[in-house]
Figure 1 (cartoon, rainbow, N blue to C red):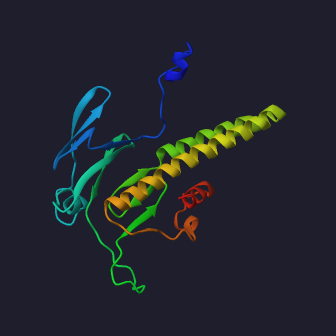
Figure 2: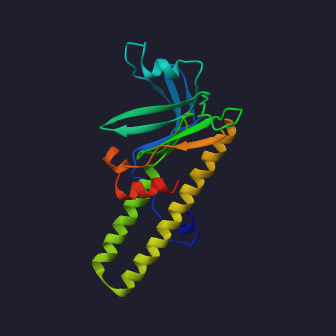
Figure 3: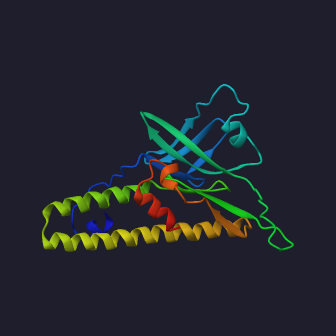
Length: 217
């Protein structure tokens, strides 16, 4: 948008189709009964709507637990309501099987998903909304070009494919570096990913694109 303005071209306000917003501790404050969130109209206070029962619930186990530190959250808009997914972390050590070493290894576990590309055992997650948005937009553009059936359209499709691959490579390279940084921060010697065998059967919503994307990590 800024580049188009500098060139003297009209550029409308950008819109993002994913109904998800990621907050960290710089733009949100998380309390036991409410959160304050930064918006384009300033800071707002959002009170939690929690179950009456406080025992054996996720918020009592994590949000109210001093052993866990709140590191951020995701705001989701769904069916006319807002849901705040609060992210917490705690120090957890895993002992690996005896491999002949005298010491123990600390493992950073990584689960892979669609809405969140990666979620670590330390409670950090990488949102997949932007990745899925790109995929939808590239697919839409490819479909439009394929309908033309011209040589120029075919060449443009190849160019779009290179742009798409480059964007994905950059995205996953960034996630990979941040996963390594997460492991270093928590003193983890090993990063363990979930087994991808049969992931499309275990995750019905995962398309061929997602299975391919997971393997790039």
